[in-house]
Image (cartoon, rainbow over all chains, first blue to last red; front, side):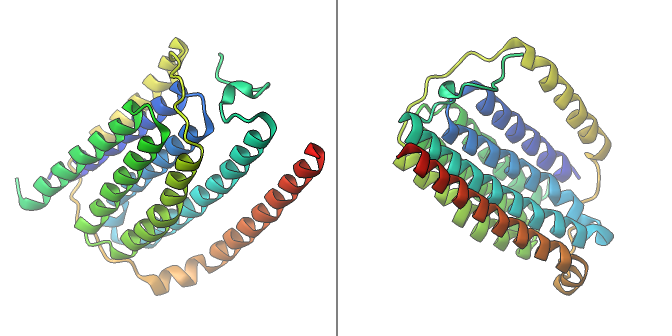
Length: 103
Length: 157
């Protein structure tokens, strides 16, 4: 009966840990790791959708699109890491001169 | 509590524990390993509900390719970053997110979970165009990245 609750609580905790990892670190590798964990939380949240017979194909479609998105994100971040390392010999986001999380 | 719920509870506990390992580990390499472990537990949750097609996709593509590349990257750029204190204003979006997720949990917690198998033929007929577009997007992205990297190489010379 509480299977959905267990899955959703796990997904929420993984998502919040990923958020915290993303905002408490200052390098691109950890950012990549936290983004992938966010995608992991999305996968977990998709499990209840698979239990609705009319939505099974849609859930699988969302899963495939999520995997494509995560692969694209990996591609972009690998390029960013390589370029940043070539330019600054550092992968810390402190060396990036614009953007950031200062509100 | 039946056996499926117990397995699910154990898997959820292990998933949360390994995700906390990502956060608490100082070395990026160990963080990446913990992340791969978290992904394996998530894929196993799909296997528990017999969603084989999703399990295969997550295990082979998400863990086997994306996860391992991340571990390899973390091993190559071995780096122990300094942790920074989190800005207190992040509390606002975090609380909003928790509120939305808690409402979802409240609404659907007692939902009966009995997963059905995926009809691949129906998926192919409905999503063929979307998959073709996604492939095109990936190729376009790869070409763009190769162009950017080459341009930067010329600039650095």
